[in-house]
Length: 197
Ligand code: MN
Image (cartoon, rainbow, N blue to C red):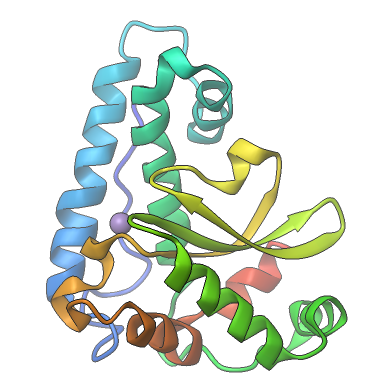
């Protein structure tokens, strides 16, 4: 069963002006589609051909001879997750369980924001910044390239893409401004809370 290229969970222009339809035309329509197509080419005829996406990511993360499959499949997983982490009129201070957990783990929402943005800014080159559960401990985490928390046995709760293709059309080289918009205007905290039930 091939891996599918899912629709965005909102219209391409729904996150403007913070993330443009033009960015989604490339990021969802071309980058994610290429990762889906490459994954399907690479798993065809292998033992992973009928595996679900999360299984493909976890199995290939352990085997350096399968780095090509891992890089593409993990990027499919990462992008589908990242797009769900955003919504129109999102961002700001959450409510519910994640709010309590952030305050307990970081001391305040602002301390979490500072640490999360710092992880994104300091990820050298391409990669991702995450909020994860390590057992019962909430942590900020960052990964290079396609790597993700699943490859480290961690449960991802929130992720932001810091590859240049995620922000260059809207922010050029201003990664800190892009991360500020993600945190202040885009995070879908309802999605994050839904992962904790
Ligand atoms: Mn991307």
